[in-house]
Length: 210
Image 1 (cartoon, helix red, strand yellow):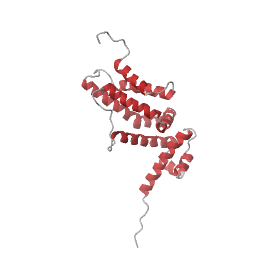
Image 2 (image 1 turned 90 degrees about the vertical axis):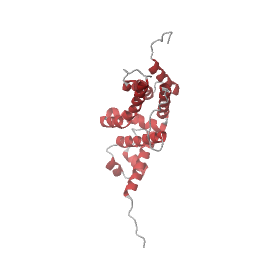
Image 3 (image 1 turned 90 degrees about the horizontal axis):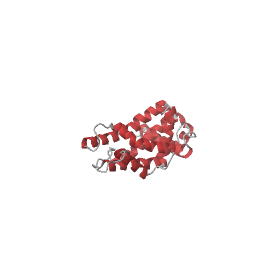
Image 4 (image 1 turned 180 degrees about the vertical axis):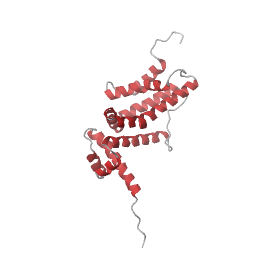
């Protein structure tokens, strides 16, 4: 008789985890964060709610991990097989920044990303632990990409040496997040381009010989 194999618990756990990720993201998109529950996630994923509580302390923690996984998959798709991703350095800083900010606009306008991003941004305000994890695991790595590209521009002589790259990054990304969070005006590619132009060229009048 052929020897029977025991079920692969690792594969089963990973399958359950993936189902939970998908359930959390889809429910937040369909019903909103407030109406999403651990029970609902468990039912959608086809697992017991105790399975979820064994791995995560709250629905916010589930959503954060699911969103980080989603973002990682997006980065891998953008960066290639090894998952490496960086802001392009074509030698044209304005074009490179416009490219990545346009991609940010597209992501924030994509329902797949919009609902969980809004939920986590709001939850991070009232839950300091979630907010800290969200910043550490997602926002800071993204900020580092801008800082690295701006430092390269400093080395190339296209950005002043006395500029703080982190502050410059916030000049570029802060307005996008503000407009998106508060829904003050449409978030468009044209708006993203204008932010790059304003940040790189400044607001003061240019002299006639420039």
